[in-house]
Length: 66
Image (tube, rainbow, N blue to C red; front, side, top):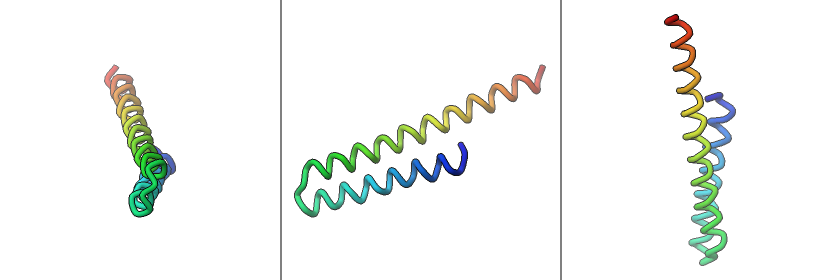
């Protein structure tokens, strides 16, 4: 995963956590739910990038072994 991708994913998760906390503090369910969704989206993107990098590494290993 590139450093930029990782930073974007982590920033999205952090912003989501902040929105969720603010939503809880103000009793705003929409803001809270939006924050949770942002966190989940960031986590899914991060997992996807990790999977992509592992697959890329596996392909490189196979090419090297041939």
